[in-house]
Image 1: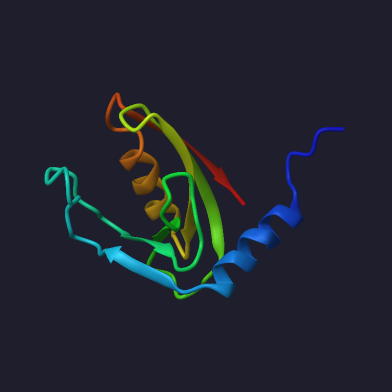
Image 2 (image 1 turned 30 degrees about the vertical axis):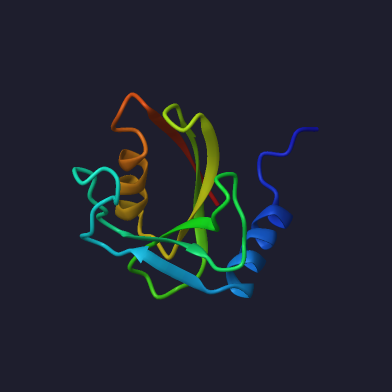
Length: 117
C-alpha cells in the first residue's frame, strides 16, 4: 500500500537539520545576488556540510518560530537552471509557508509544490 505519510522520512530530515548548522546567507529583506528584483521576505540559507543538486548545501527557509522543526518541504523545478531541488521550511508559520510557496511559483521559470509534515 502506498504511504501518504512517512514518519521515518521526517525523522531523517530532522536529523539533517539537528546535525548541521543553518547558515543564513540571504537574510530577510535582502535581494538575490543575480536577480536584484527578487527579494527575500524570510531568512534563506543552507545547512552546512550537506549537499544538494546544485552542488551547494541543502536549502533552508528559516521562519520566525524559535523551533527547529521542519514543518514542510517545498519541491521545486527550475526551468532556467534545468534542475530540481527540495528546500526545508524550518520554524515557519502558516503565513511564512504561504510566502515561500508564492516565492517559488511567481514566475514561469520556477514552480514548486509544498508538502506539509
